[in-house]
Image 1 (spheres, helix red, strand yellow):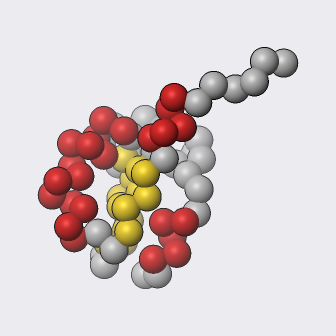
Image 2: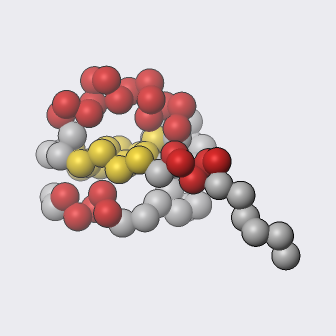
Length: 69
């Protein structure tokens, strides 16, 4: 497993491993990766982040607005 997975942008096909919502957080661990929505990412972050090789958080995208048109 390489840490470069965390730099790959998340897209609409990436789903939360806890509830199936769109994933905005990727936790790369020695054993693989976990994907989370913002809610579940925050819930599991205190336990997982110390073990994570990479923690990729795109939750700031939730506040973005698309330009009109």
